[in-house]
Length: 290
Image (cartoon, rainbow, N blue to C red):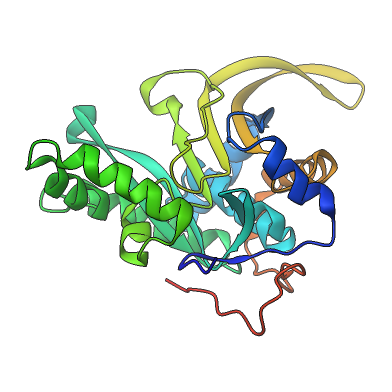
């Protein structure tokens, strides 16, 4: 089935095809990973950027590191729909943004290129949040939601119709663009509401295959050479859909992710190359650049 947001993957490994039938729901296929990120390393890098006049954020570093890993490991940008595996033709991140001093919130979505360096990622993220927090600004999701709730009963009918289209046919990209549930990565910063990291569920609607939750800082003992030191740690709770990649693949990816969080300077330059998804059987697939 043709989709506006991705290409059908016809892998040579039958286990991928079988897994999508055995585990036909995302909650069946959810795996849980927790990573500890040394905040002292991140704070040192943020201070270094501040001296250069750059306001670097924790989330900017987290997302930049993940994008770099995806640029070398394309399976992370796959999704499963109706027991079929697809590779996205774009990369985007959905996240919750607090408005009016935390009185209400909205969900934002930002598109990135896989060769974006950490400064570009941080700039796009900051610009999107600033625009979203302006009084006159509304996200595409806000505008769509307002239209759906105006008429009693329309929301129930519309969501059911969107789910049906998404599963059996295709959604127009205008709907995919407005939906935060159709995303490469969904991330939430629970530290902003002083909450520890959790394992957030994967939505059955949409295409989200990986959800990450940033928790509030905690103190933990870490080994530094031959000594044990107390460091301020941020826990990152990650839920993944195991149908898009096997355990070994995920393990290698998240081990690589730690490397960037221990040394964010590695993200200041663009990757030397971007690894393509070799299982896409289309000729010259075009990727959406936003």
